[in-house]
Length: 360
Ligand code: BGC
Image (cartoon, rainbow, N blue to C red; front, top):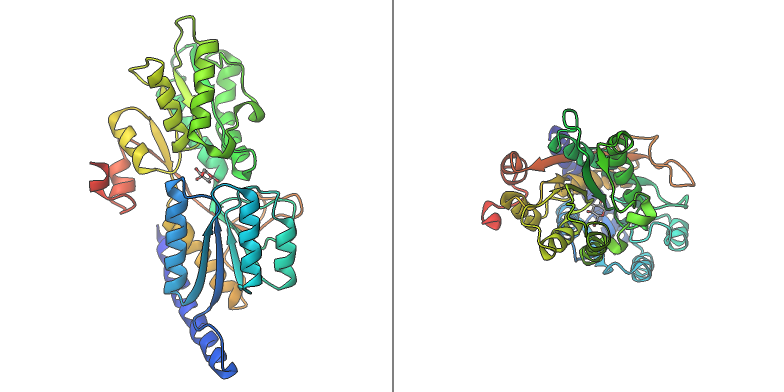
């Protein structure tokens, strides 16, 4: 919290200073855009609430700090995102802030960006196999998975119960670098109980390739859950827990379970604290979500940009974890928070992230 507020403040003040210098230079040149420069923001999709909030928060924060902003969404189509970034490069942006759809599709366009001295920040999702990404702003993605796995272990009371309990596993899109971190974090907690026999994956589907969900799409997850239920739970057995990486996927799984006659839900995880899922948590349909304050992520990103354009080194707190295949990308990682029916009020409502009336 302190970090956030401090960063937001230094970010804003720093940006205002940069804006003043930049506009002074611009008027000496007899041109320029005014403000602190141009920022191109490439977001993946509007189908998920979090990216809409991310885009809005970033746009407002950069504009408040005196920057001109181009914000684009690519509807989960990687090639469209590449074209959008090409356009931004053509518009001579100073900085690109990119939440990649396909982490390996951007090398070409980023090489172009680098040749024009554009600073590139990987936003939330790391961009792989390129030297041309300067910084990474995200959350502790392994911890997201740890929180999800730990929640299930505690909900099933595996320390004291022998089980066996049936669990099914879901992961995100294979094109998203975070997917592996989320799953590895959760699996490190869950796997020992599978080995011990207290948890059973009746489908046998435990590899990332088997459990991934294309485009993080809830409908894809719903269909996979339907298949799992009809193929592996047609003997009267029930699913006791589901590892789900993201709220949209959790809701797809819940729809499948409801369609298959479940009136009491298994323990089901999630991520992003989307309004619909927090409502589900209150109703007892979904067990938990992992809250990641996108306002903090926007503030961190603005702070990075301000520092870079000011000729300074941005504050980072991790220079070992995120190897993108070409180099270790210096990162600032924020803390995710586990949210369930006991703390949603304090964590997501009292903090102003979700308005109380939206949950009515
Ligand atoms: C983000 C998650 C999000 C997922 C699906 C991931 O890269 O880190 O917060 O749930 O994408 O949009």
